[in-house]
Length: 68
Image (cartoon, rainbow, N blue to C red):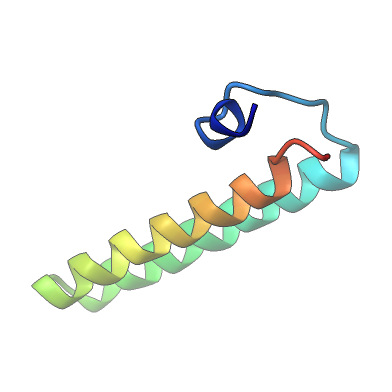
């Protein structure tokens, strides 16, 4: 069961509050990525963008995780 949860094979219905929170996390992540794009381009900014994407992914995973 734990491996199925780890790879996202187990789904549950999200409440409207959870869906709204997930949307907000993704929207804030997009806003930050847009800001980084305005700064310029560099290896450091590429790393920053990957980390933002990763942070959004982990936050969404937390919100949508199967409740035990």
